[in-house]
Length: 353
Image 1 (cartoon, rainbow, N blue to C red):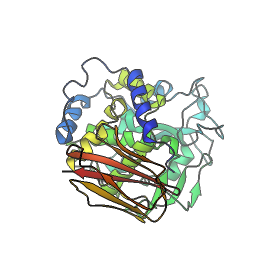
Image 2 (image 1 turned 60 degrees about the horizontal axis):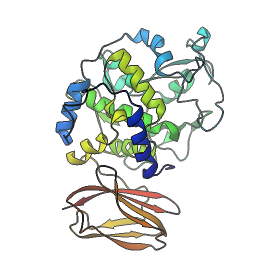
Image 3 (image 1 turned 120 degrees about the vertical axis):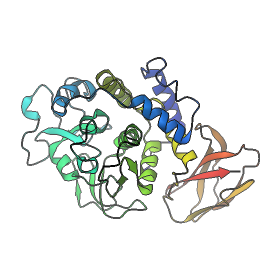
Image 4 (image 1 turned 180 degrees about the vertical axis):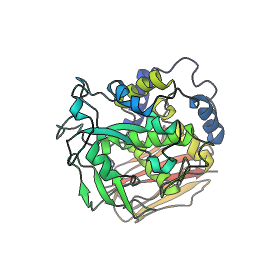
């Protein structure tokens, strides 16, 4: 469910900029770049990080994933809007797996990008904290190496609402694991980190139904992009980014600069945002003048964003099923259209030439 608006996204984006502890000059070689040039520049900045041993990760989690009071920040059991069904403590040795037979028994280390996708002997991926989280051992095991996705009819659900079942996101139909909405952006930005950190270094990776080497397949890019937009960077991610930098001496650029996801994907022509509902059409696209937006349901709001995330066109309280949006006064480039109806939200990349 898409609960957060773009206004909130860019407000929080600016908030996170004010809180992030980016070393002076860290990203100087990346500023002003787009597309592949930006991707390569970021790769060169964050590669060759300090590698820690996999066994030592348990000693690092108290600084990277601590909710306070030595409580493990487990994204598979936490309920940010309420009370978690259980918690683990770094101060209790028996809370660390160990053996488990049910939820709440203990926590262990979850490779959000599963080991089988990159080969577990791959160094430094195997111990890279940016994609490894402390999670409930039983839930981690149920997730296995299934891709992330979205599930409407789960075959199994965790106590915090994470789900396992057939994927309903366009482009993939097999079994996937869906975390709760509040941590989807965290996962997405971890995945975008992998695509850049291990760019050109993953030719031997086995890959998966979600990945090719360190790259995401088209349906997965679409999914991760939507999760990235819908769940903006949180203070948790910013703090975690700073803590990992103190350990590995590299950063996740998509936490520091969320807008770089667009800067890389759009110019590369990779992003082809899939319709969230099948009863809407937007045409012509590309366009040099206007677009027609037609929906089977009454539309409530239409917003067009530029590549910087700024609103450039807004229609509120639309109340009709078809309308036009004039783009003739806009500069050439990539834009993101958001259409809200009473039942869903639709995202579409628009090209103005």
